[in-house]
Image (cartoon, rainbow, N blue to C red; front, side, top):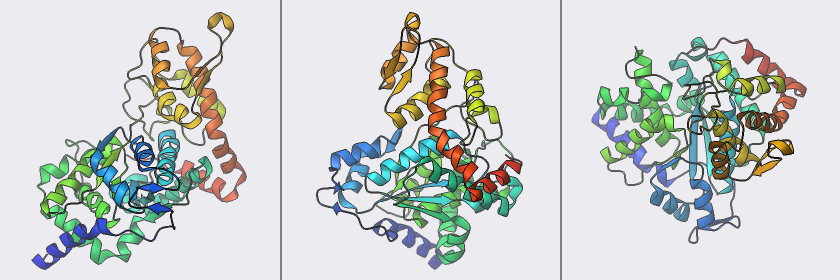
Length: 386
């Protein structure tokens, strides 16, 4: 690669934050930082609530103050059925961001899934799963007014002269150990035996951020390392405006010791089209030690799914067992659980009921819409590969 090619890639990355893809007209007062009747403080609070961590908060506030239609992005590998964290939590987060004036770009990472050997590397199957996932988000209530779905294969092929020099420049400016530390983003470990494609993967994901002109990286905490790599690359190329990292909380698996849900283990998560009986059985079997809040998936489901969705969590009990209780915040819920005022059995029954209410529109959609029904049948027939 010539020096001119490397310089061109860096120049493209430096220019990225100053422009954005065409977006719907918005009532934005750039000086006051308001959007659609929301003040800057209100917008900042709503956006900040999405992330367990924000790097950096002052940069986020300044972005909302000064830029019209800031771009937030998340990328996903179409790799199997969608679990509730990816379905419901992502819908909640996207709706918060778009309501705050952001454009949200979904990077449908079909090529990345192929690189990571998902669906056995079969691109047609991967793309079918991608269409299914979009269908789930529509059904659960994601507001798509300010949302764009971009297929990596199409976008990269269409702008290859912009994309590949950027990827190569990022690869050239980083040592192999630094790239290997990002292997977590693929669900791998540094000690795993990685293919050459999987080693190249982090350089591509880092390039995506600049290629999509993203101001905010809104991915999970498990993607943090590659987002930090993007900020380090900005230092390398002397770019002042760095992508802001807004990392959401990762829900644990339902069984003991599972730090993360797994699509290859159907008992580790609630899936978006699970039937009511399946949800009830999974929650009944879920790890839920009495009096313990940390590492308790049932508490986490209430805190990160039910309370944000309904703004309350209702527990129905007989009077002799404490009577009905409505929780409006996680603090009181956790306090009562620690003190033994809330029994695991009552927590699980109430949680199952709330989750089924959220999922019912999705079930209905995949039963009554012929195209959606066909997509789900295809996805269920595929073997999940790690």
